[in-house]
Image (cartoon, rainbow over all chains, first blue to last red; front, side):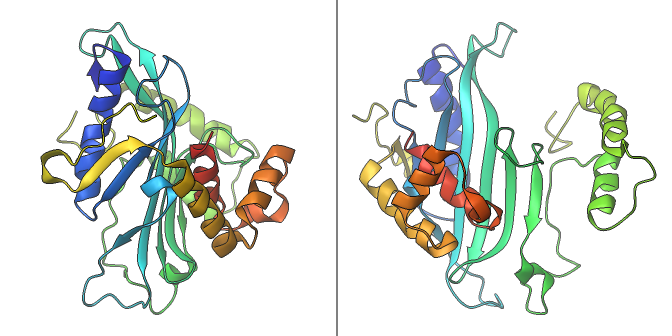
Length: 195
Length: 72
């Protein structure tokens, strides 16, 4: 979302998030101090409810007891972009952490993208909680969990993560090489109706 | 000082504003104890020291770290 100033770019970035959050809860999108008028290039962050939980309503047939809580944080910065329609300023996302927790501390899932840090996985990824793999899971094999557009190479990575034995030591590099042309030239990433 | 006006825009029931540091510190302590078994102060100390040890492998780690970085 472009803006004529860094501040207006932030406002254009936040407004859709506000709408999205309002679909499941009321609360606050908390921006790091100084983030509402950020300097270009400065790392920023927002989190729901000052870093705390957003308590969600459960469907009547929800099989698990306890409070259902959503946590979300996104890392971003304002950049200059001189492409027509993209600037002069816009926000670019640099990471995120979204998770859903049930009860005292059971994580149902977590979506992470932490390009920096000590984790070996620096690309966007998903953690499935043990509860999703149990008999009392709130989803089944017929549930459709929307994702962004998944590549065939990601399917191969998931197969390896689930126990397939790679045939080459450099399998991850080979997959990255195979995937790059598609990522560079594909016309949509999350929804084929929104190019 | 908040520079982005707190809004409940268009009846969404979602306001936008700069972090309430007192609330964030309280959330940090609560979440660190609940998910990682350490106090918020201990979590911040480990972060300053650059080594979280085994708690970094726990499922709630990213959730707690996000509250700490919100205070940066």
